[in-house]
Amino acid sequence: MEALTYDARGLVEVDGAPPRIAEIDGERAEFDARSLTTRKINAELRRLVYEERIRDVTIRNPGARHSLGVGILQRCRITFDGSLGYFGLGLIDGPEVRVRGRVGWSACENMMSGVVVVDGNAGSLTAAAIRGGDVLVRGRVGARTGIDQKGGTVIVLGDAGSMTGFMMQRGRQIIVGDVGAGLGDSMYDGTIYVGGKVRSLGVDCVPGEWTAADTELVERKFAIYGLGTPPELKKFVCGKQLYNYDNLEPSERKLVL
Image (cartoon, rainbow, N blue to C red):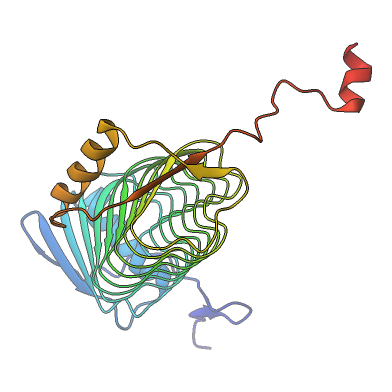
């Protein structure tokens, strides 16, 4: 009987061994992912980065597969020559990644450090809960970009969807285009800069006072990525009306007092 390649319940790749098809030239490597499954692509990438100590990897034809490039905890350069599906580049710490295409939902989720540049658009929940690094999207992003953001910088050159910056805790967002309803809803800290129109502010998100530090940050980020002169931006911060950390709930008050 022919050996199984997939688990029919979920089309999961059974064989986790890297295919070892990459062409290696010094500290650079490249391979074509057109005929590979997600697990095989990630296995080959990890082999190159961790075993072969390659510093610059190019992956051609990723085919919008989900969960590519996740969990890379090494300083290196990775280029995806094509689009990614959902949950791409999550849990990374250190790499500089270029996506020559689009990305689906939840790209860069829980990113710790590094740089991700997306040449096209990004789906909803981009940069969810990131703690550090820079995420630059040259196109548009969907709803809830930077939800629960804890650090780092998100830069969007196009428009952003509704609830951008929802429950933001720290970090910065620079949205050059327009933003949908509910900007910064329930944010606790951090700063959001917007160049276009804001459909509506979320709960406890208020305009902030512009300072020299804001100018320095925005100009520095634009210079790093060759984005030219920054447009005029508006600053939004937390109004701190939801800060109730010192107030006891009725049930807690009975226990303490």
